[in-house]
Length: 231
Image (cartoon, rainbow, N blue to C red; front, side):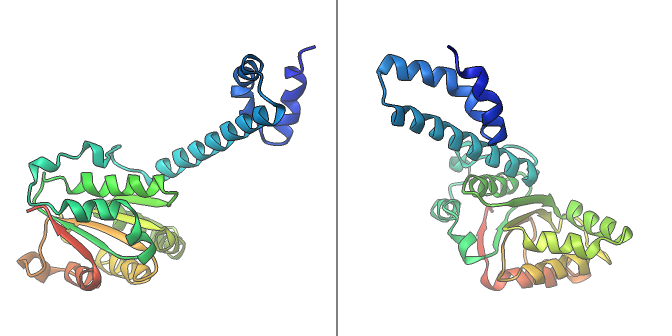
Protein backbone atom coordinates (compact mmCIF):
# COMPACT_ATOMS: atom_id res chain seq x y z
CA UNK A 1 0.00 0.00 0.00
CA UNK A 2 1.32 3.42 -0.97
CA UNK A 3 0.64 5.91 1.87
CA UNK A 4 1.78 8.96 -0.14
CA UNK A 5 -1.65 9.99 -1.55
CA UNK A 6 -3.24 9.75 1.89
CA UNK A 7 -0.50 11.92 3.45
CA UNK A 8 -1.00 14.82 1.06
CA UNK A 9 -4.25 16.29 2.50
CA UNK A 10 -3.02 15.86 6.07
CA UNK A 11 0.25 17.64 5.35
CA UNK A 12 -1.61 20.45 3.63
CA UNK A 13 -3.96 20.76 6.60
CA UNK A 14 -0.93 21.07 8.89
CA UNK A 15 0.67 23.56 6.47
CA UNK A 16 3.50 21.12 5.82
CA UNK A 17 2.81 20.54 2.14
CA UNK A 18 6.41 21.45 1.34
CA UNK A 19 7.43 18.07 2.73
CA UNK A 20 5.79 16.50 -0.33
CA UNK A 21 8.58 17.96 -2.47
CA UNK A 22 11.21 15.75 -0.85
CA UNK A 23 9.13 12.96 0.67
CA UNK A 24 9.59 10.42 -2.10
CA UNK A 25 13.35 11.01 -2.37
CA UNK A 26 13.83 10.89 1.40
CA UNK A 27 11.71 7.73 1.64
CA UNK A 28 13.90 6.03 -0.95
CA UNK A 29 17.01 7.24 0.89
CA UNK A 30 15.69 5.86 4.17
CA UNK A 31 14.96 2.46 2.61
CA UNK A 32 18.33 2.21 0.87
CA UNK A 33 20.31 3.36 3.93
CA UNK A 34 18.09 1.43 6.36
CA UNK A 35 17.55 4.55 8.43
CA UNK A 36 15.62 4.50 11.68
CA UNK A 37 12.19 6.12 11.67
CA UNK A 38 13.48 9.02 13.76
CA UNK A 39 16.34 9.60 11.30
CA UNK A 40 13.89 9.63 8.41
CA UNK A 41 11.67 12.09 10.27
CA UNK A 42 14.67 14.30 11.10
CA UNK A 43 15.57 14.54 7.40
CA UNK A 44 12.04 15.60 6.49
CA UNK A 45 11.98 18.23 9.25
CA UNK A 46 15.37 19.59 8.17
CA UNK A 47 14.08 19.88 4.60
CA UNK A 48 10.99 21.75 5.78
CA UNK A 49 13.03 24.17 7.91
CA UNK A 50 15.37 24.84 4.99
CA UNK A 51 12.41 25.44 2.67
CA UNK A 52 10.80 27.90 5.06
CA UNK A 53 14.05 29.78 5.62
CA UNK A 54 14.57 30.05 1.87
CA UNK A 55 11.00 31.30 1.44
CA UNK A 56 11.55 33.96 4.12
CA UNK A 57 14.79 35.00 2.47
CA UNK A 58 13.12 35.27 -0.94
CA UNK A 59 10.31 37.41 0.52
CA UNK A 60 12.75 39.71 2.34
CA UNK A 61 14.82 40.05 -0.82
CA UNK A 62 11.73 40.97 -2.86
CA UNK A 63 10.56 43.51 -0.28
CA UNK A 64 14.01 45.11 -0.20
CA UNK A 65 13.54 46.11 -3.86
CA UNK A 66 17.24 46.22 -4.66
CA UNK A 67 18.12 47.68 -8.02
CA UNK A 68 20.22 44.59 -8.78
CA UNK A 69 21.43 41.49 -6.99
CA UNK A 70 24.85 42.82 -5.93
CA UNK A 71 27.01 40.96 -3.40
CA UNK A 72 30.38 41.60 -1.79
CA UNK A 73 31.83 38.62 -3.66
CA UNK A 74 31.18 40.51 -6.90
CA UNK A 75 32.83 43.75 -5.73
CA UNK A 76 36.25 44.53 -7.23
CA UNK A 77 38.24 45.66 -4.19
CA UNK A 78 41.46 45.72 -6.22
CA UNK A 79 40.06 48.62 -8.25
CA UNK A 80 39.91 50.73 -5.08
CA UNK A 81 43.08 49.98 -3.08
CA UNK A 82 42.41 52.95 -0.77
CA UNK A 83 39.09 51.49 0.38
CA UNK A 84 39.01 50.33 3.99
CA UNK A 85 38.32 46.63 3.40
CA UNK A 86 38.37 45.85 7.11
CA UNK A 87 35.51 48.28 7.71
CA UNK A 88 33.49 46.86 4.81
CA UNK A 89 33.85 43.30 6.10
CA UNK A 90 33.06 44.47 9.62
CA UNK A 91 29.84 46.02 8.31
CA UNK A 92 29.04 42.76 6.55
CA UNK A 93 28.84 41.04 9.95
CA UNK A 94 25.84 43.24 10.77
CA UNK A 95 27.06 44.58 14.11
CA UNK A 96 26.11 48.11 13.07
CA UNK A 97 22.52 46.88 12.76
CA UNK A 98 22.46 45.92 16.43
CA UNK A 99 24.04 49.27 17.30
CA UNK A 100 21.53 51.08 15.04
CA UNK A 101 24.42 53.03 13.58
CA UNK A 102 24.17 55.12 10.40
CA UNK A 103 26.61 54.36 7.58
CA UNK A 104 27.68 56.95 5.01
CA UNK A 105 29.38 55.86 1.76
CA UNK A 106 30.81 58.75 -0.25
CA UNK A 107 32.67 58.95 -3.53
CA UNK A 108 32.44 60.04 -7.17
CA UNK A 109 29.93 58.54 -9.59
CA UNK A 110 30.90 55.12 -10.88
CA UNK A 111 33.09 54.08 -7.96
CA UNK A 112 30.74 51.40 -6.62
CA UNK A 113 28.82 53.15 -3.84
CA UNK A 114 25.49 51.63 -4.87
CA UNK A 115 27.10 48.20 -5.28
CA UNK A 116 28.52 48.30 -1.77
CA UNK A 117 25.29 49.58 -0.24
CA UNK A 118 23.21 46.87 -1.91
CA UNK A 119 25.80 44.22 -1.05
CA UNK A 120 25.60 45.19 2.63
CA UNK A 121 21.82 45.12 2.33
CA UNK A 122 22.04 41.64 0.83
CA UNK A 123 24.16 40.53 3.80
CA UNK A 124 21.52 41.93 6.15
CA UNK A 125 18.73 40.09 4.33
CA UNK A 126 20.67 36.83 4.73
CA UNK A 127 20.92 37.58 8.45
CA UNK A 128 17.12 37.76 8.66
CA UNK A 129 16.87 41.56 8.66
CA UNK A 130 14.13 43.50 6.89
CA UNK A 131 15.67 45.94 4.40
CA UNK A 132 14.26 48.70 2.19
CA UNK A 133 16.28 50.17 -0.69
CA UNK A 134 15.42 53.30 -2.67
CA UNK A 135 17.11 56.20 -4.34
CA UNK A 136 16.69 59.52 -2.57
CA UNK A 137 14.43 60.68 -5.41
CA UNK A 138 12.24 57.57 -5.17
CA UNK A 139 12.00 57.88 -1.41
CA UNK A 140 10.93 61.52 -1.33
CA UNK A 141 8.52 60.95 -4.23
CA UNK A 142 6.90 58.05 -2.34
CA UNK A 143 6.45 60.21 0.75
CA UNK A 144 4.97 63.03 -1.30
CA UNK A 145 2.61 60.63 -3.09
CA UNK A 146 1.49 59.25 0.27
CA UNK A 147 0.74 62.79 1.45
CA UNK A 148 -1.48 63.34 -1.59
CA UNK A 149 -3.60 60.33 -0.64
CA UNK A 150 -3.66 61.01 3.09
CA UNK A 151 -1.24 58.21 3.91
CA UNK A 152 1.86 60.22 4.76
CA UNK A 153 1.97 59.35 8.46
CA UNK A 154 1.57 55.63 7.77
CA UNK A 155 4.26 55.69 5.07
CA UNK A 156 6.61 57.60 7.33
CA UNK A 157 6.01 55.17 10.18
CA UNK A 158 6.69 52.17 7.93
CA UNK A 159 9.95 53.67 6.68
CA UNK A 160 10.98 54.67 10.19
CA UNK A 161 10.35 51.14 11.46
CA UNK A 162 12.25 49.09 8.85
CA UNK A 163 15.43 47.63 10.37
CA UNK A 164 17.73 48.83 7.58
CA UNK A 165 16.92 51.65 5.18
CA UNK A 166 19.31 52.23 2.26
CA UNK A 167 19.09 55.64 0.60
CA UNK A 168 21.02 55.69 -2.65
CA UNK A 169 22.22 58.75 -4.61
CA UNK A 170 21.64 61.24 -1.82
CA UNK A 171 22.21 64.79 -3.02
CA UNK A 172 22.29 63.84 -6.69
CA UNK A 173 19.54 66.41 -7.21
CA UNK A 174 18.70 69.45 -5.07
CA UNK A 175 16.08 68.79 -2.39
CA UNK A 176 13.19 71.23 -2.49
CA UNK A 177 10.14 71.52 -0.24
CA UNK A 178 8.49 69.35 0.85
CA UNK A 179 11.13 66.70 0.01
CA UNK A 180 13.78 68.27 2.23
CA UNK A 181 11.50 68.44 5.27
CA UNK A 182 10.19 64.91 4.63
CA UNK A 183 13.67 63.43 4.48
CA UNK A 184 14.78 65.29 7.57
CA UNK A 185 11.73 64.08 9.47
CA UNK A 186 12.41 60.50 8.40
CA UNK A 187 16.05 60.70 9.52
CA UNK A 188 14.98 62.18 12.85
CA UNK A 189 12.49 59.32 13.37
CA UNK A 190 15.15 56.70 12.60
CA UNK A 191 17.93 58.30 14.64
CA UNK A 192 19.24 55.81 17.23
CA UNK A 193 16.28 53.50 16.57
CA UNK A 194 17.25 51.81 13.28
CA UNK A 195 20.27 51.56 10.97
CA UNK A 196 20.49 53.63 7.79
CA UNK A 197 22.95 53.45 4.90
CA UNK A 198 23.31 56.54 2.71
CA UNK A 199 25.38 56.82 -0.47
CA UNK A 200 26.39 60.20 -1.82
CA UNK A 201 28.89 61.86 -4.11
CA UNK A 202 28.76 65.02 -1.97
CA UNK A 203 30.99 66.20 0.82
CA UNK A 204 29.79 68.33 3.67
CA UNK A 205 30.88 71.88 2.96
CA UNK A 206 30.31 71.56 -0.78
CA UNK A 207 28.52 74.61 -2.25
CA UNK A 208 25.52 72.45 -3.17
CA UNK A 209 24.67 72.11 0.53
CA UNK A 210 24.19 75.85 0.87
CA UNK A 211 21.07 75.78 -1.26
CA UNK A 212 18.88 73.14 0.35
CA UNK A 213 18.19 71.15 3.49
CA UNK A 214 20.59 68.37 2.49
CA UNK A 215 23.12 69.88 4.86
CA UNK A 216 20.74 69.40 7.80
CA UNK A 217 20.05 65.79 6.85
CA UNK A 218 23.75 64.99 6.52
CA UNK A 219 24.49 66.62 9.85
CA UNK A 220 21.86 64.36 11.41
CA UNK A 221 23.81 61.35 10.15
CA UNK A 222 27.44 62.45 10.27
CA UNK A 223 28.20 62.94 13.97
CA UNK A 224 28.03 59.24 14.78
CA UNK A 225 28.12 57.61 11.34
CA UNK A 226 30.48 54.93 10.13
CA UNK A 227 31.86 56.77 7.11
CA UNK A 228 34.13 55.54 4.38
CA UNK A 229 35.16 57.18 1.14
CA UNK A 230 35.65 55.64 -2.29
CA UNK A 231 37.65 58.68 -3.46
